[in-house]
Length: 437
Ligand SMILES: *Cc1c(COP(=O)(O)O)cnc(C)c1O
Image 1 (cartoon, helix red, strand yellow):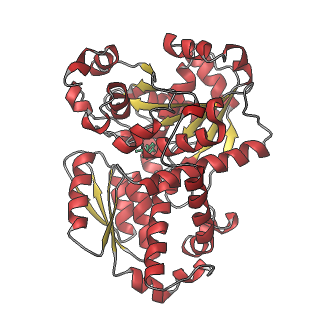
Image 2 (cartoon, protein in one colour):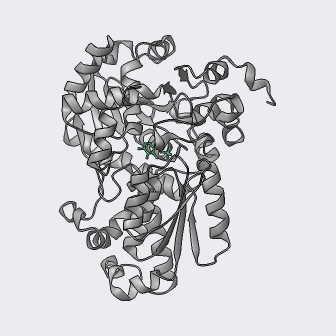
């Protein structure tokens, strides 16, 4: 494409830092979708998490009550729905719900899904190699002193804007590994402090996320006993996120909420490098196909995935190439260059993307706290831009008509994927609540 992308209307809008929506022209009917990965891969990831449940319970006693399963609740938020409608003069037909990944055990963010899964998968491989366990064993024994000492010879490294570092750091330290987290300049101080309190080595960078990842990968590659969690390319992380879809299916069934040709499901997920929203989307589409409509949300200064998908250049373009800063209060979304792997997988699946200005993160945060008493971190609040704006843009209104959904919106379910928040310290919460941009 060369520099021709610069003339695309969507790129011109993005380069001005304007809020916008993009409907994905490359989405195809689910039946025509062909991928190298499938439901069988998600099943395998789910089974692995199940095998590790006794181990997770031992390492993280807070998961005992859920039998070692790390999962979040799905709740109706009619108060927030009414608040959005009344405050912003919009309509949200159907029911608005919140998937509370901000309350996931251990990591307090969606990263508890992919991050912990990848650490466990690596642990299983090492344990088999060394003969610490064999097929059919109770994995609980991997938490004993002897195994911990064994894992202590190995290092796990990761580059992060914050939450992935927290997830990988806390989980790896609990297993017994040495851990080094390479933090980009956007990472919040409290996240670094919390990691250090778990014995994790935190290396700080003055550059952005992409540079932190690059240096972390280089240092890890130099050490044969070090394993690098590659947020940009990891299929393991992706599958850990995808398991969320199977869990969500069960939760919707338990609440007797239908998803089918007459009951569309809309899901809105904040997007950084793309792994978490991409993995979740992949899983949701495997289950509900054309009945589920997935939208990502990114900050106006860091719409990395949107830019990569709209130009078809994926990880060969970054937001700085179109004059954006990449800077945002949404630290979890402060990514300038998207994952190429994820962009290509979701290209035929994703319905579209919204971008939003940072000030809305805090407005939505206060709205949710006031109406539902639930605290989310700023990055997670980006999700609300989806339901709030779905019917305000011509592009998404056309999407609804063209997909034959206009008559069905009253029966729709909208899920805002609340990706983080429960670990935010009280003092920082108070600062956020008083932030007005
Ligand atoms: C990491 C993160 C995301 C986005 O996940 P990616 O895999 O980077 O796209 C969204 N919200 C929060 C709170 C996060 O920490």
